[in-house]
Image (tube, rainbow, N blue to C red; front, side, top):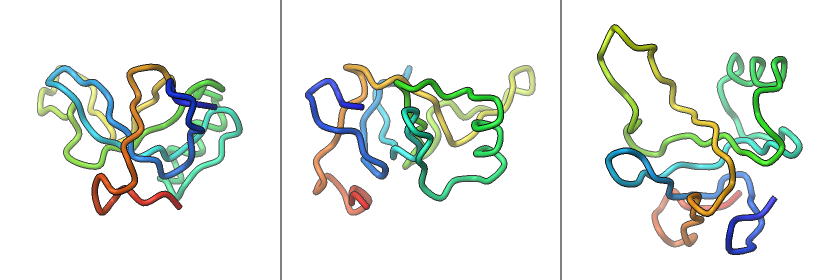
Length: 105
């Protein structure tokens, strides 16, 4: 699996993705092509594997800052700290020295 620029997607990569308010940073925590993953919530992992909800061309991202989709509206379902995303031109790999958190394992 590769980013739009041809770089290989790796676990732990820090990426920037578009959100309604602009952009947000997240870490790649699971790969759809082989379901390889970092240390993520065991119940979430069980659900993803059991129901096969992650497409081969996608990844699971974990927000690094505040969840840009968080809300307090009881009329809508709560949101978690993970997001499924295709790896397309909108998922941009940030350089390793972008922040202290941007270390690749």
